[in-house]
Image 1 (cartoon, rainbow, N blue to C red):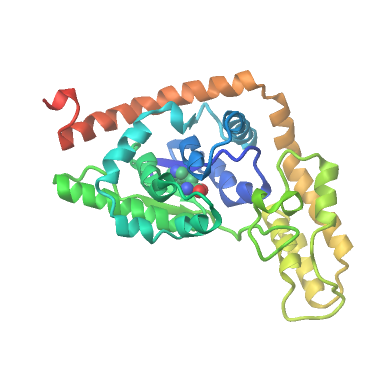
Image 2: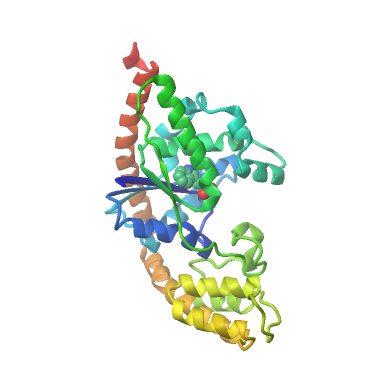
Length: 329
Ligand code: TRP
């Protein structure tokens, strides 16, 4: 693996589900891959509706959170999608290679369309822009959660079709690098994935004060307990998963055994989980508090410059290959 690319939507501040599902993996990959490119995808965000005034704030907030989590701008390229116009330019080119039938089979589109009053054309062609994000950098791999597997398969399909129709092996075959580990579920509804859209009590924001984190964990749905069962309830399993992810595997195994024996007091479990989660979040909160808006804007400016050098070279080549742009005449 020489170069990887990944993107995240600017939903404002990050939560634990984002952290364990993607961001922690991004941070770790910096030690393994020479070139890591991470992008806040604001043009994807507008496909679900626009709240003017909010988007820029959320983009800046998220970028700062990523740095606080350990995305290191001296090693990785961190930038905002709309600052590199080649993303939308390549998306248009690739839309000519994308099949309408494939797009209409995307489960993320079908899910989102079901929940929307206004289904934008952008929501439908969203995977084409995602393919452009990745192929623009000729990335070898893309670290994502398993909900993105279909979009990556689609990206490989577009790359192959482009190469075949143009007659060159230009775009690489991109590998899907799945984050390992279970996905974190909502605290208040452990059958749904942790997400901000469910409401405040469902997620733990990375920047929430320690007392608020402890309170949310204390209120997490478990079950009545006190009875030996073959498996633990989804809520308890989620708390135990959190312990594992925080690096307290021994503790988690011990508590799992006593839960299965019907001997675990959930109050005790919640105390341990709150302690571990806060120990993990404390340094992130501290780093985030040190980071000014001006510093974040600066990081994003130099990130966009570095991204653009790569993106511009790809677009020059793509224009040449399909015969558009002034140099083609
Ligand atoms: N669709 C991705 C998500 O919802 C975000 C994304 C956009 C992305 N472009 C990308 C992820 C490129 C990986 C690579 O999470």
